Structures are given as C-alpha cells and as structure tokens.
Image (tube, rainbow, N blue to C red; front, side):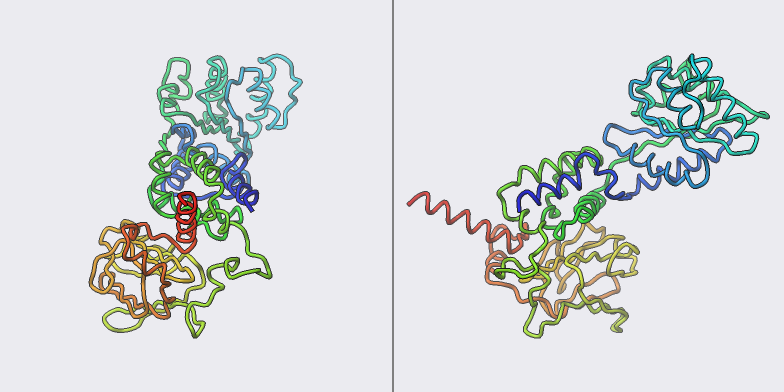
Length: 416
C-alpha cells in the first residue's frame, strides 16, 4: 500500500508530472491572455517572466499546443545553447536542412523559409523558453531574426521566457531589434491560498487519488503555500517531499489506495459507501431565499465547494458570498464545514464559524440566502470527544483519530 501511495505522489508531483494535468489559476490565465494579445500586436513579441518554478514552461507548452492548430510553432529550451545549436534546433523544426553548414548558411536558410511563409501570411512563432540562459552570442542570433522583414512587416513572431530580469536583458545594447518591436511583457504571480488547495487536490485526483483532501487537508495546503511562496514548481517539490516524509502514517496510505472490491473489514470501506444514517439517505442541502426554496443539493462527492463562482458545486448567487466561499467534507461519522477565508464569513445557527461539524436541521446563513442541512451523518463518539478537546480547530477526521489513539496506546505500552 505504501508503494502505491508513493507512486501517486510521484505521478502527481514528480518528474514528468507536467503532462498529467494543467491546473489553471488566475495568473496562469492572465498570462495566456497577455501572450496572445502581444502576438496580435504589430510588434509580435511577448515576454513572459517569473522566478524558477513559476510555471513558465507549463504555460508556454500549453500555448504552443493552442497555436499549433493555427500556425507553425518552434519550441526551444534556450538553456546554455550556443549559436550553432540554436540555429540547428530552429531550422530543424521549420523543416529545413540542418546540414546547411556554417552558422551563416543556416541563418540564410531560416531567412529563406520564414520569408516564404511571411509572403503567404503564415508567420511562424518561435518560442524560446529560458531565453535569459542563452549564450550572449546566441542572443545576438535572436536579435538578427527579430529584424527580418518582408514587405515592411516582421517575418517571425517571438515568445521569450526568463527570470524577472528578462526585460532588462531585452533592452540591452545587443538586442536593439527586439527592443524596437516594443514587446509586451507579463510577470507571473504566485498561487493564492484557495488556488493552492485546488491545485494540490486536482493533481492528486488526476494521479488517481480518491481522498486528496485527506492527504492535503486545508491547514497542510496553507503550510505548503507558505513554504513554496505559491510558485507551482516549488509547490510540487514540497508536496512530494511531504508525501515521502509521511511514510508510515495510515492517514495518507489508506486514503490514497482504491478500496478492494470485497473489503475484509469496515476499515477498508471508502467513506461515502458507509451508510450515513438509518435510512441510508445521503446528506442534502436545501437553499432558500426570503423563505422560498430555490434549489437543493444531494451529496454525491466527498468534497463539495460552495460559492458564487460557476466553479462551485453549490452555487449561491449572493453579493455576500465569495466566489469560493466554503467547502463541505463528508465523512462516515461527520459532515464538516470549512470557511475558506471568505470576505463576509459564514454563520451557522446565528454563530460565526470558521470550522464546524454540521448536524441535521442546522441552518447556514449566507447574506440573503439560507442553507438548511438534512440527513447529516450522526457524529461518532470520537468526534464528540474531539469537539470538546483543544484540537477542535484541527477538525481531524476519523482516520486521524484512530492514528492518534494508536500512538497513545504505543506510548502506554512503552511505559509499562
């Protein structure tokens, strides 16, 4: 089981995980729009900057796939490329003969190819990732290519990525052709707190995990964001390290392995397959406004997002509701509500809460809307004790409690 757990972590955050899934966030989406806008401008050059691990390569790969349906795309990693290597990579992807010979001959062949494309209004796009890591002489090649024109129009569009100093590099003396094209610039920003949670859970789920919220509960997501600064590349490394360091803890192992078809005990059952009450009915939310029921939601998932955004599972269109306002976590012995740092907080039975366990007939107030809870699972004795303990704010789930109980028993044994 531990091997499966490690495998999920490697698949979600290890080498090559970029091909698993793309989790879009605000800065990611804004970057794509900025790059597309810059290419449509007369200058046709876009600069994408950000620190290591900001997700530049992921964004460029996604954009390259998008462009491939419309135009010819050349994608080059510029890290430590010498002029001959850079020219060979560009020429090969343009369909030219890389045996052209000297650098001057390859440059002439590239000019011939792009001039033909430009005359037919099919300008290729050259994407150079890590452009700031090119050799200075290779940057000179980029500057020459940026100056190619046909009929007073530039022959090549460019997307260049690099660290925050990329703009200064482009405006240096040796890059006059690039600078004169007035490139559009976009500096990537980090993931926000809510985006970090969505990112971690989405990647674990894409890797095959059925309990991403247990492996990365919300307090752990916050800590990982603090450690990584919210940069996706660093977040991947810290998340993978956290999974590896958690080896031996059943909290992660049990919930990342798909249950057997014929469980040997109740502990092997997935949370949602255990009955929630005597009638076997799933929990339900009844949403009302001004005393009139406007919608209902029956739980089909273990994690349910509530908010004003279309991204939410339960949409409450109220000015006092944040886009992603709160989340419900359904366990066999409790229905947990977590407020996701919403602007106007969450009220349950007239009391402001950040984290609480819900019972049937509890009423959640959200601006002018009310959400009534029905068929909530009965709270177990262990959860009842947790409500009275100092650890209430941590909202440990049933597996957490069993692990802590086992640890206490081991301490008692060791003292005897």
